[in-house]
Length: 224
Image (tube, one colour):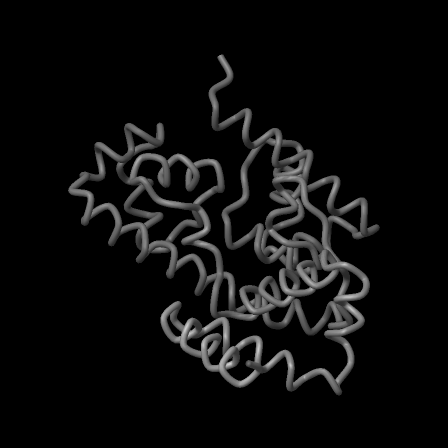
């Protein structure tokens, strides 16, 4: 009988293959970016195994698509070279696995849940939970999703925030937000001469309601 983890792995495999073929990449390049063997990458695409969040982040970074692509979203390409990205990812993946492990351990202890209890929720052995927490093994995404459910956590908490992938994702989100603005607003923001107005708007947005009310009243007094 196929369980929920296997179904999720199959879906991820389809999305990984779609991402790779969309950008005409070879399995060898994607495997290198994810820090896995070609055989393991093929297993990811076939849904026989599931990648970890750091591995998916690395693939997303390499292909220049957000991790949210694996929920169906799109992205915009950047100009950073593939070799530069691969060099960064070599050191980043092990670090990300350790960080996620520390976060998992902290959340599990705070929730007062044992290895055995969490393993039962996730449908894995307690020893595997221990390996996840030490960063010895990368946490496959389906397992991480189930751990989040068991510990009442958000997947977003585990996504890279401060590293190169996190900064890249934030930049892409900002660009996407800009492109969603009306054309006239985009044009206004793009003109350097309008920078003082944008800075003023930013300062106003940071004011408290009482302070804004005071400023508005002052302006009314000036105009009356």
